[in-house]
Length: 447
Image 1 (cartoon, helix red, strand yellow):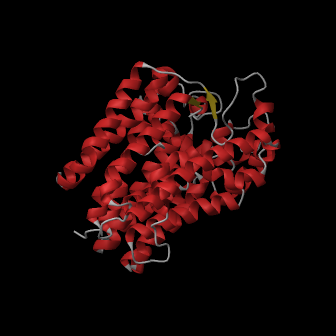
Image 2 (tube, one colour; image 1 turned 45 degrees about the horizontal axis):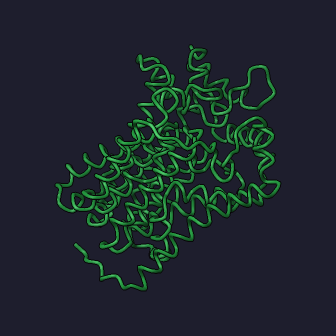
Image 3 (tube, one colour; image 1 turned 135 degrees about the vertical axis):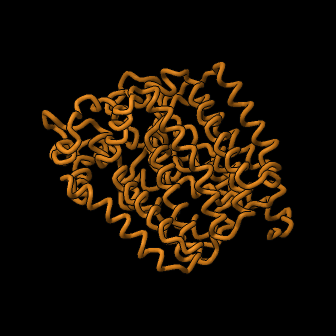
């Protein structure tokens, strides 16, 4: 185990300043959104709504509340803060991963159930514009795939709803398959998304351990499981996207580090399916590349890439060409909300949304990240995720809602918190949980 040098008061003070500055940045983005024309979109869309905190920067209504599940959320948070760091060091590896997964599931559900079962879980994926609204009409999957692109653009009699049209068909197919195995309805779909999303608490540490730093992987478990982004994992399809792609990266990392061809192939297949869940998940590429740079195993790509291309080929043969869908969805995006969301605001305010998902600990940890250290596992993974979100916002293809949309990248950015001094990690973990509890109880988030 590599021991970190003791932290100086000056370095700890610097961490606190950066963490506090990150939260101030959120308030700045909120103020600018309300005081400028950037708020027009929210006013036009919700003319009779209560005063809104978001779109500025997150999509939510100001709605302070306390519920029976609030006590559960506090208990989970306190238990994780008090015992999490200690158990992360002492438990056997597989037991720790199981405990991390259980913590993640409990945390996501506790936060979601503050709004009750119907509003907090069952209704989230069954509301207008969501995937479940079209499941019943998809009776022939080959026809669905062959005609999918023709229904992406808006202002047609048979245009797909917002979320269906905004994603490749793989996302909708998941819910169709769930329906086919009798897991129908918003409740079942919500539970599946939570259980899949919680897999990040296993996949992310496994990746770090596979790259040679099990000490840091252990420290990462409570931070990933207790990340503030759990608010938007319960419940959204993006939680499932995060779980799927993180498992793909973990499989690829295990294969690249051990010379396992089948593991690399499996990782490629999973990541290949990922880009058919969301177009933006093509940006998992920099994170996968970080694995190659750390392991120096370029041959791993010769197994992973064909696996990903095989998935592309299957969808193409079924009638859906990914590039056609991508170009059409960009056009659909600017037919609607994108044209009302000013680039000058969201190109930087997106990062305020991200702060609420990753928490102040991750932001403080970024100041300790050596982005030029290509051989360090943690730095490489964080750098890959940072490159992904910067690309997404600079291109203008992400405007708002990134507290949810960027969850597949946020789970890797949280790793930066592990670089904080060990003696201060418990306090930072408390800050993470505290932020999540405040946001969850003060704002009524859309997801």
